[in-house]
Image (cartoon, rainbow, N blue to C red; front, side, top):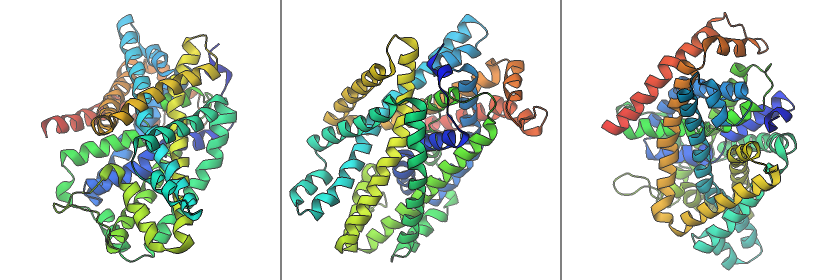
Length: 452
């Protein structure tokens, strides 16, 4: 019996918090505002929201359906859909590619989230009068990056080792509501500061001339998949931990809504904060209008803004903000590290502890290589995984669910769900939509990138 059959989420809210935690993370709070600020604010937001509805929701549901049907790791779950030796082999390859992609995402994810930990610790050092330590914690350096990558990886290992219910589910239920509350309070507070309304206009008023730009479309597509962790196998793994009676249509809607709300709230806080910082004399944009330090936006703009507040308030707000950035990074990293870990537990004789340590070691070694070659590798790995690999893997998943998975078997799976009526318009249209519309949309946007 596989490990997936031995353990499931104990409650619906536990799954929603864990899946939303997987989706809500660096992709929302760091990636989304950065992408929006780089790609024209309102135009990017509009394209992103459209793609979430047209692609994010149906594709997230497809991954959960495949994972729940297979009750196993992504490679074997995809292979189970095949009807011939060839289609099973191709399915296994697509699933395995998602596991590799998840592992690669972990490499830059742990570096980024390590920065959140160091930036949360910096105000504590400042309050203690250790300015030298605080400077080291906030300045880009080899030693800082290595140490905090290791610290963050250790935090993930602690949770993953505890398994699904005692680790992933328990921590997600604690951390997600806290994250949401602080984001709302943060956005409301930023709105009270001078300069915030200019940022609000930049975010909410789209320049329709930019909507069809290849970089806007591809950035929004990459953000859609990265944000919802589509194409990494994480949702297939979580789907495998669901019982067969859960209504996946409703669960996916809750997860997508939570994820999109957090991305929007993060942008509602960070983009106005950029303009507040600019109002206070911090340089945000280059002379040509492009964003300065786009990869490190959260680490340059927000600390500069916090400093302008003065007194102990700047330290308290900085600690709270970066602590929650750490929480967001942790809930996502847990789900992504679970992908290769669960694969090892199933395919080898390794127990969960040893598998977790092995995956953590591999990720740490790869992260170390990136840290030593930061300029060349950091941006490259992000682009390769989120804007290249994830859309192609999602394309493979859509094709397999729509064209390879036998319709009678799919309908049988849908019929087992509580409250799912296979004769309803939604359940009749969804398989057809994933079969035809999703592949065409993904291909069209990838083609736009190539031709653009």
